[in-house]
Every structure is written in C-alpha cells, then in structure tokens.
Amino acid sequence: MPGSLVGGDPPDPGRWETVLNPPTRRALLFARGSWAETRRIAGILREETIGGALLLAATVLALGWANSPWSGTYDALLATDFGPAALHLDLSVREWAADGLLAVFFFVAGLELKREFVAGDLRDPSRAAVPVAAAAGGVAVPAVLYSLVNLHSGALRGWAIPTATDIAFALSVLAVVGRSLPTALRTFLLTLAVVDDLLAIAIIAVAYTGELSAVPLVVAVVPLAAFTVLVQRRVRAWWLLLPLAVLTWTLVHASGVHATVAGVLLGFAVPVARSEGGGGPQAGPGLAEHFEHRWRPVSAGVAVPVFAFCSAGVTVGGFGGLADALSDRAALGVVVGLVVGKAVGIFATTWLVARFTGASLDGGLAWIDVAGLALLGGIGFTVSLLIGELAFGPGSARDDHVKVGVLAASVIAALLATMVLRLRNRVYARIHQLETADDDHDGVPDIYRAARS
Image (cartoon, rainbow, N blue to C red; front, side, top):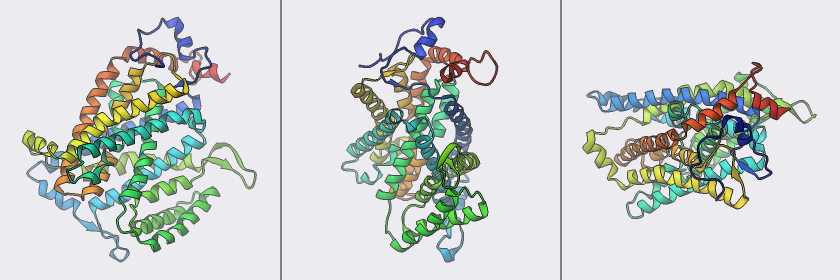
C-alpha cells in the first residue's frame, strides 16, 4: 500500500524541505502546485469560507423561523409568486431561489471547472486524474448505498441526493479545525467539490427532467451561441451579455430541463486563455477570471445563502420529530450515503489510483489526511437539498424528512472529519510554516521561489 495510513511524528525541521520535495521520480499524490495556482486557490477559498458562514447563518435563521410560532409566515413567504406570467415565469420565491439563483452558482462552477482544466495545474492529466476519480467515486458509492437502503421503500427516485459535496460548508469547517491544512489538500477538496457539482448537474439534466419541450430547447441555442461568440471576442459589455444569458436561462427553463443547466453551459462558453485576432491563445487570463471575480461573491454571498434560507426551513418537532424523520428510509439512505458512502467512495478511489499507478503521497502527508478530507466530502447541503426537492417535490413530507437527513448527515460528517483532522494539526502546522516562509519579504514564499528558479 503506497504510504502509511497514519504517518509518524513530524520530521526534524532540517528535513522538511526533503520531505516536501523528496528526491524521487515516482508520481506523487497531492504534490504542491505552482505559486500562481496556489495564490488563486487561496483567494477562492477565502471567499467560499465567508460564503459558508453566510450559508450557516441563513440555515439557522430558516430553521429557527420554521420551528417558531410564526412558521406560517415563513411558508407564506416562500409560496409568494412573482414574475412575468406571459413568459410562464410567475414563480414562487422558493422556485426563483432554486431555478434562478442557483443558476448563478452553477455558472461560477462552470467557470471554475473550465479554468482548472484549461489554465490551472489540472491541465496536466496526471494531476487531474486523482480529484476527478475521487469525485466519481464519491458520487457512485453514495448513490449505490442509498439505493440499497431504499430498494423496497418507494423512494428510489432520490438516489442522487447524497452525491454532492457542499464546498462552502466544508471550508467553513476547515476554517475552524484545519487552518493549517496543506495547500495541496485544500486544492484537492475544492476541485473534487467542483467536479461533483458538474456530475450533479448532469444527473439533474438527465434524471430529473420531466416533460421535455424540444422547441424552447432548440431555440435556446441561438442566444447561447450569440453569448459564446461575444465572449470569445472578449466582449464584456453587461448590457449585451446579460440579456442573452437571461434569455438562454428562460428558454432552458421553458423546455423542462432544469434551468441551472443553462448556468453551466454559459460558464463553459467563456474563454479562459486570452486571444488576439487570429494569433491564437496567448499567456494570461481571459474573461473567465474576470467573470469569476465578479460573480463568485454574488454566488457565495447571495445566491447560495438565499437558496439555503428558502430550502432548509423544515419543522423538526424536537427529538421525537427528528427520530420520526430519520425513520424514513429516504432520510436514512441520505445519512448512510453522505456519511459512509462519500468517505468510502473518495478514500477508496484515491487509494486505487495510487495503487494502480504506483504513486505515493507527497512528503509529510499520510492516508489519514485523505480519510479526513473524504469525511469532509460528506457535508452535503446546497445541491443535495435541490435534488431532494426535484425528487419528491418541495414541501412534501418526504422532502422534509430528506432535509433533516441532509442536515444530520452534514453535522455527523463535520464532527467525524474534525476528530480525524485534529489528530494531524501538529504536522499541518509545520508544513504550513514551510509553505508560507518568506525570508525576502517579497510576497512569494521561499519554497515557491526555489521551485520557480
């Protein structure tokens, strides 16, 4: 088995450079990336961590309101319709949050995924293989476990609920218990979450599309193509691009395909590398970075917290109500899928990649670190709640039970991950000290300057 499971005590300070950069030609898992990529990922993680705090606050507010004497006003608010009826967009507040605001979330996810594979460190297939494989395992195993739990329950339609990781919540946990977690592990978690978001939206498009209307879907290609042509020519004018994006979203929504799919398609249309005329791609950021910088705060700070507020408000009814909800096999399947399935799927797939490629963990890391991240992957929220609503209908009894299952599983996964990661805090602190040491005070850590030279 490549690498030890737990790892020993931290090496002496004088050996840390050798540990982090071992003189070997063997492939390394979780190797440190470039300084440019590290700095970019750090910025993303800061915004997502803040978004996680807002997400948590919105969830607590929704739960408090839904379980208060004024719960009727909460339900009435979510059921309020508004929007142009002529375009069949007179939707409820709950529907606008799920179909409209989450399209922004998936637009940013599409931008991030494209940047990772076109201009990020993951353009190297050997580096991309691990998080992509881990994401696939973290989707497949929970789906299988949920299905096994619900073989005879009549709730098989919810098989995809435990397949998604909520990166904002996961990073919020890391902000408390894993401040010194090595950059490579944070990057792995972020990339894994983005990939399984993409897999989730593919599942939504295929498995949760009801009656498909072909005409709006075909017509949607027109504004999408116009948007693509404009961004490929580096047009940034919001008054041109935003109407095309909204029109694409409206037509996809009218087709019966979940409207968040439009967000991913628009994100994929945005170029990553800068190009000029017919000269081809040149080094430097393209519109993807510009749009990501503009829209990530809207996604993390507005879209996802508002959706959480609209979706997380479930009446628990004390311990008895909690036990009643978790006695539903759908909720039980969600808990098993997120807590057990995610951990097993992510860890086992990562280990298998190492086993069959002969790769070893980067210096200073051990398999218990992968186990901690795999447990963090069981924190499912935003997309899990969305799929639950699509599977069983928003506001239904089973959907409420599923919400309780998602919340319970996320808390359990967070607690287990905290216990595992705290065991390694001393090791993480030493790695973090080396990764951030900057003797020349020029803003570039010494270890990255040495690698660059």
